[in-house]
Length: 387
Image (cartoon, rainbow, N blue to C red; front, top):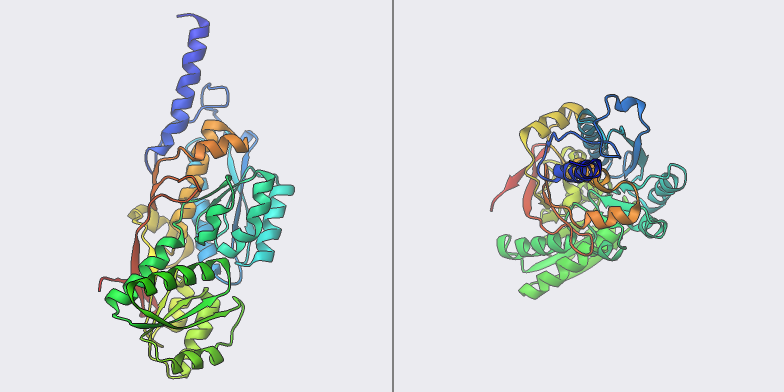
């Protein structure tokens, strides 16, 4: 065999191994260095590959953001134990998006302009991602969100992807559950005036009316609002069968407590942001609260490792997807390096089975599949309900 042939075969083998990680969670294929040679013995000494992370580490939805950060840290540990990214140690810079547009924009600006990361894992809240997304697209920085679900993000740009389902599915499931299972004919809609809240409002309202139901009131509130007494009194007077509330955790906690004080006993149905441990402990026993959440059939070893790191009792939404986002990004970087156009093209070929389930992206960068469950706040936690 000639030297040229040996070099060609070595290169082909390097590409195959680089893509092998898409096969399954926990793949242990040995990485190759950038020239397709032997695995480096000491990734600590090599120049690291650095990614960015944006999520609420303080403020609204911080419980979800901290759990997602812990999941990312687990994924980084796993990647580096398996040899890093083609022999380079993987590192992540964590920025606090605070679940609001200003903090999200500032976080992304630092990651893009100062840290110059090739890919941002985030944001968590759609309000974060909607704010910094346009600048990221202009900067040709790839964004892989692990929890932003607003339907409007589908049109953000070609460098945007998410391994969390769009709310086109969640809003439809919520409307069908309210009409078919809860037997609601009249529903009041309350929402936080954000990309996420308005997206769910529109999808829920459209589908519920399509089924033959009536929307008796529609009211929005700023995400940072903490006084809902006026709007809740209006809703109470409209006598709905169900109150659909697309609210973020902190505002929802305030509103649900105030509804209890006003004597509102109507069934509340919420969005996936209610899968927050803080909300469960704060409002448990004060009313009837159910919510729609995407299903992630994560393995027990992932659950035990994450809870061991967070000290929590349940794996909340976003955390499994955050773990998988790191693994998907790593395998793409192994295969094509850090060029944004090559990353974008490789992302469209992803077919990966992770702790959150099957991950593949459509032409808009959206997850191609997703299923949902109904959970109920009970006993300071939440349980899945079948009826």
